View 1: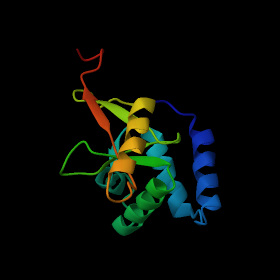
View 2: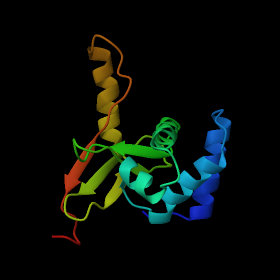
View 3: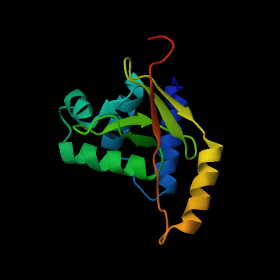
Length: 140
């Protein structure tokens, strides 16, 4: 995914403001670093790229960005949390196991099935996550 960095930065900043979060210079630096590479990343990679920022500050900012829907947490590895930029409504991903390329996909039939499943479960579904692992055409 290639995004226009200025447009995406403005979208993220607007979402943070409208969600009641202040957009500090530190948060702007974190957002800029996320947008600089436009690929999947870990909190550790951000910490290394921004050595003057505290680890806790980076973690808190990632949590906020995830909560307001600007990044997605990916279930690629049990050792690390991976993230990617995400500005669309609820969606799922395909992830290439060789090159780690990520594409967003909308699975309308899956969403319909989950809504039907919600009626059959003793409780309320509050969230779900579906990542499809592939070998992309470039890698096969």
